[in-house]
Every structure is written in C-alpha cells, then in structure tokens.
Image (cartoon, rainbow, N blue to C red; front, side, top):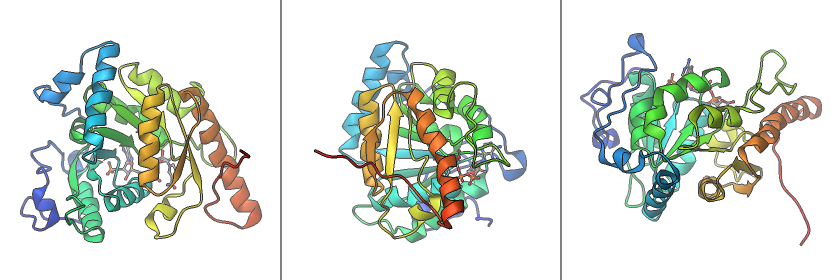
Length: 286
Ligand SMILES: NC(=O)c1ccc[n+]([C@@H]2O[C@H](COP(=O)([O-])OP(=O)(O)OC[C@H]3O[C@@H](n4cnc5c(N)ncnc54)[C@H](OP(=O)(O)O)[C@@H]3O)[C@@H](O)[C@H]2O)c1
C-alpha cells in the first residue's frame, strides 16, 4: 500500500514527517544510522558508566507516569503491529519504525484507524528505525532473527542508556520445531553482548503469537521477562501488563535461552495437538 507523502491528513498529521526523519524510499532502503547527536536527551543519558544507566532509568521512569513513548523497530511486521495495537489502546505513545517510508506510514495509518486518538490516546507516528530509536523512551525490536544484529548496529548510538526489548526467536528453517540457539546462548544474550552494558536488553514476548495480539480476545498466556537489570525487567513487565498479559521476572538475560527455546516446543505442541497459538502459563501454590 502506498501512502501519499507528505500531504497526509488525519492522525498522522501530528507525526514527525518521515522524510525529515531521514527515512529512505523503498528503493533506497538501508540500515543507515540517522542518529542526530544534537538531541538534548541523548547527550544527557549518553555518558558511559553506571550513571548513564541510572539517568536513563530515572528519566524514563519519570515519563512512565505520563505514558512513555514506545518505539517499535520493524514495527510494520506481524508482532510489531500486534504489540503496537495493544499498547496504543492502553494509551501509550507509539512510534512505528521501519526501513521503508511507505511501510511505516501505511502501518501507522492502519493503526491510527483502529485506535482513534482521543483524550487518552495519542497519534501514532512513523519514522525511520534510527529516528524511532532516538525518540522512544523504550525501544522494542521486532525483526526476523537473521536481521537482529544488523538492525541493532544501525540504531546502537541512539539506544545508549535505554531499555531495548528484544523479542527475537532464533528459529532456523526448516526445522523450526527443533531448538537451535545461536552460539552466544540466545538471541537475547547476543543482543546484550553486541550492545554492551550501557544498553539494558530485556527479552520478552517470545511465546506470544502475534495473531492473538491482533485479536480482541483476552490472552491467557504468560510472558517470561529476562534481563540483567531487575528495574529494567520491572518496567518491561509493566508494558507486558499494558498489553493485557501477565509478565514474570525470569532472571538474567542468559535465561532468555529458555523462552526462546520454548517457542520450538510450542510449535511441536501445536502440530501434535492440532492447536494454534499455544502458549505458557506459570502456576504455583502459595
Ligand atoms: N510473529 C510472531 O507471532 C512472533 C511471536 C513472538 C516473537 N516473534 C519474533 O519477533 C520478531 C518479528 O517477527 P514478525 O513475525 O513480526 O516478523 P516479520 O513480520 O517477518 O518482520 C518484521 C519486520 O522486520 C523488518 N525486516 C524484514 N527484513 C529485514 C531486514 N533485512 N533488515 C531489517 N529489518 C527487516 C520488516 O520491517 P520493514 O520492512 O518495515 O523495515 C518487517 O516488517 C522475530 O524475531 C520473531 O522471532 C514473532
């Protein structure tokens, strides 16, 4: 679908113009880093060392009470649009990130049509991935596993001091029902190793089918949330709950191996029981 640019009307009018945000046209799609170092908040949180992490957490914590801005990289796909829909309905500010102008605009327009802005809801914005990463308080990565690292590389500078929510499941075709984790132990760990300690990677949503997020149903499945910072995990659990799900602290980022591996297990269960969209639920006593 091609969306006229920039003569747009309606909810996207309040968006930052994608052209100004440095989004290439479809033919020129690339992962160029459009980070603009002049933006004051990146300077504020971009220092190295633990203080930048604390500053980032405090700044985004403060914004939480105003409903923080969530930027979704690759937010045009199945999972990204599903999460965006749930979060937009919950009143979050959303930015759809993409490599391609037309795709970002089309996804944002579709979402805006489903979630009309009112006093509790905000216009959905469309941007290049790197601009989205710079603008978001929390950044969510929803691209296929084989493009995880290249996408992170294109936005790394903009992520300093922030939480990066990684949703990647490293399924390897054709044997997607067999656990095949990367040499770093998990895709979540691979992201954390690649980005370094100034960026808090929190892994989540691996066991939720995008199809369910797009539906109106109450989703029974739980979400395992892993990451090296407990406070960052707590913030992501709040986002999980905003999306209508229940989230669990599931330990450090290395434990993302468990949630990523579970997806292949769930695929096997779907096949053998003739189910679709099976998920997990944590139960216990006391
Ligand atoms: N689908 C699910 O039910 C589900 C559930 C749990 C976890 N996940 C995980 O979530 C992630 C996204 O899954 P999905 O099903 O939403 O994927 P998808 O629809 O196939 O792709 C998502 C987006 O990734 C971007 N993309 C495609 N090729 C790219 C490339 N070469 N470089 C950079 N970006 C590229 C595209 O955005 P643009 O073309 O707009 O840039 C695309 O819309 C995956 O890692 C998957 O394992 C998916």
